[in-house]
Length: 172
Image (cartoon, rainbow, N blue to C red; front, top):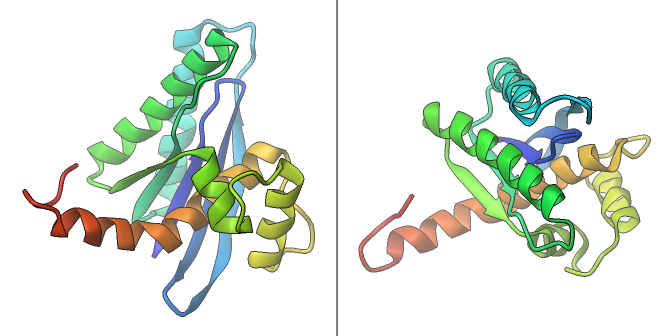
């Protein structure tokens, strides 16, 4: 399965694509960030993020998209920008009929390091090891996007089975 991980943000939106599956070692397809200037208007920045993610979807052709869930922060402006960029990714995936997995930072950290309290350095170290990279992806947003993709690769199929087995069947 090929998964696009999206670490949403307006200044830097991390994107990472991995291939893998049950019993198949995951490997890196592509990693990077979409950047927008902090001085630009929000609408312009969201359009740039949308264009960037759309280009990645066209180029890498993922089978699923994993997006970080927004969590509460003290800086409301940062939360809003993160939520807006995440919503852009969700809409773009939904328009293509791609399943979307939403994961909290703690879920992602636990999936790749074994601890939901891991710091960015630990996540980056494990991403480097798990994907057999010679160096850690930079910036941290790129490593986080790969962590999201791996989290979905490993947890997404099981979560889909649980949802299907729940009373009322699968939900979107």
